[in-house]
Length: 327
Image (cartoon, rainbow, N blue to C red; front, side):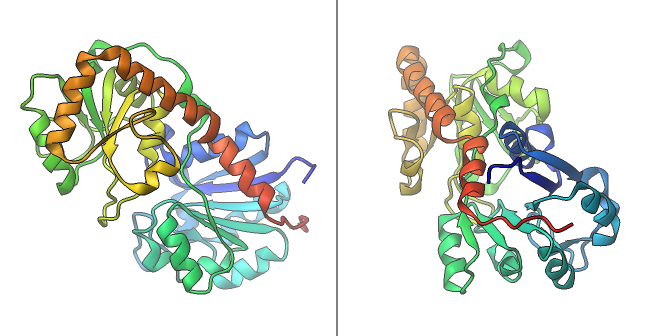
């Protein structure tokens, strides 16, 4: 489309200003789209959650009656539901789809596939962050599914100074899960300095960080340890890889094939086989900072060139047929 797209963006900023939903919103703005934001975080009354679905599961219904007037005044080409299981009821969806294109973005597959797959076909287009789930949706007969990997917005590339409060050799920035503890706990017994940021860790940690604190923590470490397993135990390329790469930190993550679609191991990121291999490589790259920096900067450049939300969203929206707005 040659005209400037008008998009109603509906989302909840659960992880604050540095969270993935906010990052997607920023990516839309970076493309120059005219975006009307409906922030569920500040307007909880406009959603109904009759089945008590959380963590990206759905359906969680946006009540059309509460947003109808502002949407019709804006006259969007697209209404975009960004994660959180958000959708319209079937009846409202059919009504609104006669007036514009309605898109649903899912960011927590494969974990949420069992519930989201039950209504994903109601959207004009629906995206998934997971290659596995993309195939699973297709196997169910859903023909409106697109694979949309994670990305990052331009804020993450802006250099920031290290701060003593957050300074470390190695950081983990993520919330507690049992499988993460198996890796994280032994690191605290090593001679390098480790800081752990996130909720609910049963070991020494600094608590969660959001917004400016997130950036300070990220830019004040040398190495980031990434965990690719989801809450449900799937191995997935997660957004944390792109966040860390964009800031020019040296990333260490497990070896798995899907990662090779995004970064080259030992050239742009560092892979590890197990806990002992991770510890060995941490010591090696702390003792060889020039080599660490070459890999970290290569990862940053790859992220900047190929893995931005600006590029991902532009490519996706250019690939689909967008209806002429009839509001």
